[in-house]
Image (cartoon, rainbow, N blue to C red; front, side):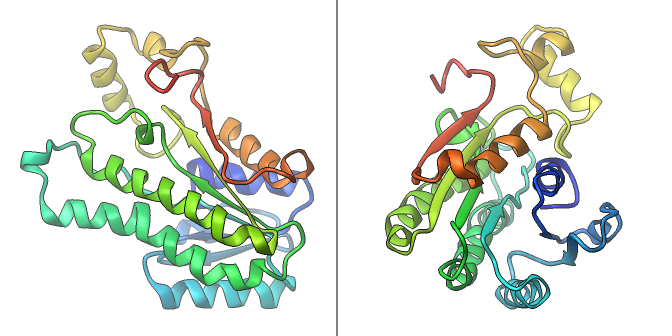
Length: 242
């Protein structure tokens, strides 16, 4: 998910700390958004496809010599639909992108991470794991499954020194799922202005992709070297989550 939003911000944050990064996205735009050709290896990759993931990982290791960090961020937010109206195709597609793609990436990258330096696998979850909402069943169910996948991975990979942690963002308004029309509709639903809606959390603050990216970067570093299986919200304090 490196071509935009949290994925792109994470690439940029890691680069600032001296990392070299393979930037994967199904969108060919990923080939154009990063200027440092030596430190970034952009790869067009469908993360629901096992063979595509294997090729991307091989390319990464051949180019950089190894793999120490994986940020599993690919995702999509399906159109809103109550369970009684949710189509099989929309539900299955959400599971493929928001759950199964992460399982495939975890499985295929684990052999490389076992040889890595302070290896870390970071999963980008969602506030919906703890606080789902009506109309978001396809997304929330997939993210809940992803959360369990992360917990099991932490148990299974700990013996190899691989840390597996999750971050749970909410309402990150500079990502692709938000536009002016969606913002205005959601704010109206809560009887708020758009600016009030953007700060509808305990801290009355706005969360951006760069905030999430910096948390991810810190989870990869020395501060969290002894932490695995963590579930960290980055949402300004959501009352339902708290």
